[in-house]
Length: 279
Image 1 (cartoon, rainbow, N blue to C red):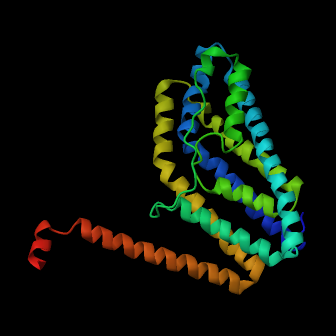
Image 2: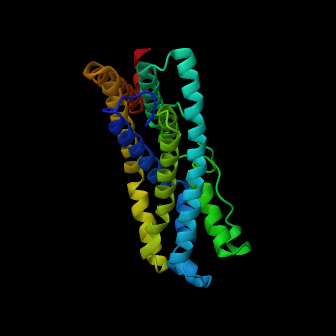
């Protein structure tokens, strides 16, 4: 695959990176842009426009895959940059590459944690829905898909999107980085198929209600994947002590946040007269 991990570790690294790409793409469903695409491209709205839904969906997914390919190309350039930097300055060390990967996982996890104020940029932008009435079907469908598939052109709903690019670049393989982008684009674009059963307005409303219910769980799933990836890469790079160290760090951080939350809750529910009595 690349220059950093040996043959035994490469399949694990590939699996972890593709898992991050998959969850990053899936989490995008809950962005304002993703939800609006489900509302805009579904069987009954396409029928009203005189279009076949399945053909519009194909154009949308194709555009998203192209967008994912562009993202993969960016990650491929990152592999070349990281390879040149590491071999010249760091000696191509597996420990350095693995350590950076673990740090990236922890940063992504911290960014996604609701209890923390730290956030990576989320680029709050939506696609231009005026395209629906202005352009031909293949233009708006493929154009929307490409913007969503590239990952950073619209709302970024999870830091796993950043993590995916970082892990792809750290792999040292331009070809694999391109595959990662394609997987992300395919998963991200396939979200339009969620509206397959929305053949009338009531069905679409029911779909949005289900998605609204699952939204918090999707973020929890993304954080779980980030934590699993951090622990696995720690063990992959530094052996079982490395994995255990990451687990302990995550546990300590979680315990501290839990205590902070309890203290804040007690303060919020404290009677107003308590402070005056203490004075």
